[in-house]
Image (cartoon, rainbow, N blue to C red; front, top):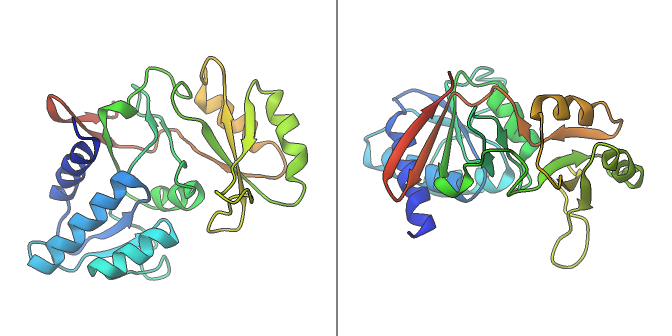
Amino acid sequence: MDTNKLKREAAERAVDGLRDGMAVGLGTGSTAYFVVESVGRRLREGSLRNIVGIPTSERTAEQARQVGIPLTTFEAHPALDVTVDGADEVSPDLTLVKGLGGALLREKIVAGASGRLIIVVDESKLVKKLGTKAPLPVEVVPFGWEVLPGKIRKLGADPVLRKTADGKPFLTDGHHFILDCRWPEGIGRPDAMELELKRIVGVVETGIFVGMATEVIVAGAGGVRTMKRS
């Protein structure tokens, strides 16, 4: 099936759950793009009213402005009703890998301020074990980043500095670098690995999201279904 069609179906199902007056975290990535598009369309049509959003990246902020979603701040809305975002991998217990779009730090801040985190994916993102399809993005400070790959290798990973098409280091919105890390057999205990990575001085954040997703909306050949955290 057309992957974009699946992503759009999942996005539309998630936006069906939004209500007038909500403060919403707006995710980043190819599936979240369709979420923002849908929210903007429904605001223009009047089927949703008084929605305000906090974007997880400058890219999403620009899209939100283009489609007519009013943006707010954490000063005005320190607690969000819900965030709708995508994911790069989803395990059976709804632990996530996020950050291939480069926005993992802001995504985790926004998700942590939300009453609910709804993840929208196509079925290709479902895995039995994290790290088996996508690398794990680890956001690091540029100063001294060269010492970090060696420390991360001691945890069993193969870290690679993310670069742009012209060969320069990719910069996040927070002006950090990203190390994309792969484990040959996947990530055995994501909760423990997150703690080990964050103990390394210079690591800002990881793309492991443990216990944050409240539900995952999955679109596939058999239709759209919802997985909920037990």
